[in-house]
Length: 329
Length: 280
Image 1 (cartoon, rainbow over the protein chains, first blue to last red):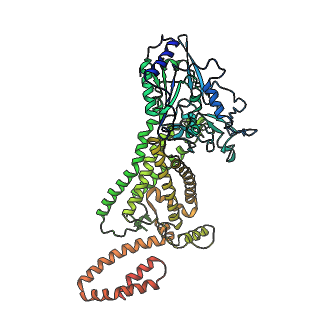
Image 2 (cartoon, one colour):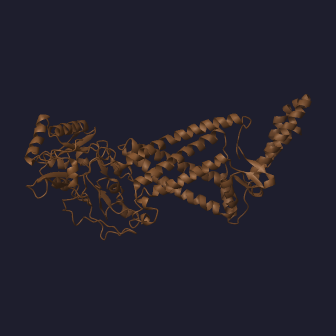
Image 3 (cartoon, rainbow over the protein chains, first blue to last red):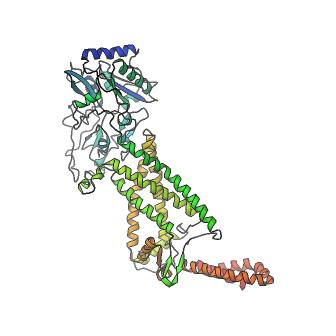
């Protein structure tokens, strides 16, 4: 990925560039998903198009997402049981309107990146990684990656231990205490609520609709479609604006591609990683990748054990042919 | 088979070096798996384990995963080796036999002061039952663990049904393995079982203990030794007189059957009777 320049570009010109790129590519929103739903999907967020909906109180994507998710979380029990021994309770039920960070009630927000006197608006949500550690090492497999590429937490199975948040490079999932299955097991000792995050509107996808945020965007700054199509569009737009892509290599690859006329090093520099506010470090590593070699050895180990047993067993039998029966009782 | 009576040292060789290796490889890797498996749950921070000097790493799930994988290489490799190798050699001493359940109850009763232990073989009947239990638990853990590993590397979007099955078989296997480990340790703490502990470290147990408690096994070993000597003697005899050989072949099988039917239950005695019958 190219990594510099584009700094002096004006907002107006990069908006134009984006639109130009879209026109040049002969592109429109990939439209209905009927055909795509069985294949792998990807999304594109074009930062040259997003204007943060400055004419509204809350960006359209954020309010559409909130409206779609409303009622998803039941009323937490009162009082929320104190977990033992570390008494961390996270209760967002009284602050459901918060829209400028990720919370259990807010799965997308728009970061404002001020660079060279210009403002770039960066919608942030779960990246839906290709090999998401949050899902693969969830102790109860409550979090799982669906064949379409969406990474979805099942709120009926999640204990809210927040392991997924710890292993996510962007710490996306957010906890609501006082709800979920842990209340029925050992609330004082095990679990602490339910983790929530963007699920790419999996229910809407299953019903043949686009995710709420994408549908609501007045500038069509976000797209969803078959993975190869989205990859192609991202490449074409990046080329046309002489810009940059984020999400292709990060954390081992994701199904969310950001296209920007400004480098992500510079965008990242405007972000301070805080709870619910991820940064955007280019090429952030997938830590689990380094364990893959060990994992492959694990998969080979039964075969090796079998081969060793065969070889040594054959040798032992040849050495002691007289010992028939061999019952070691 | 390395079992041998070392009468002058008051010892019997109970396990070969290879068997000791198998046991300890499984035991130690199993222990690492148990602990790192616990640290794959979000417990280290919550329970302040992370604040214990030297245990800072326990909060990092990826570090625990490295260790879990490393131990799993040994665990599943040696487990497969163990089963297949001993099957190939026909060594089935730890396989349950008919009546083991009843005999186990009798042994446990005797621990509590009711009645006497039945005459026992190299392994106690409950050892044979526990072996099968442990084997099933280990099989559950290995198969589900392999599915989970495959998913981690190659197929993060593997069918959720399969993933849920693997996860819950692994989690339940973990609880059972933990309980089985506790039971195993509890069993060797029991006084009558303690002399066996030496065996899993050195491969040998006391001969007087074995004679007293594993009478069938020691009798079998002595029997085997005697029968080797006897067959050598018989070979000499057979070579000398052809007529006698013919006679014994003709009357042998029937006489042997009768002897078996009338003999007491102990196999050592049966063998003895069978050995004697052709001559009668």
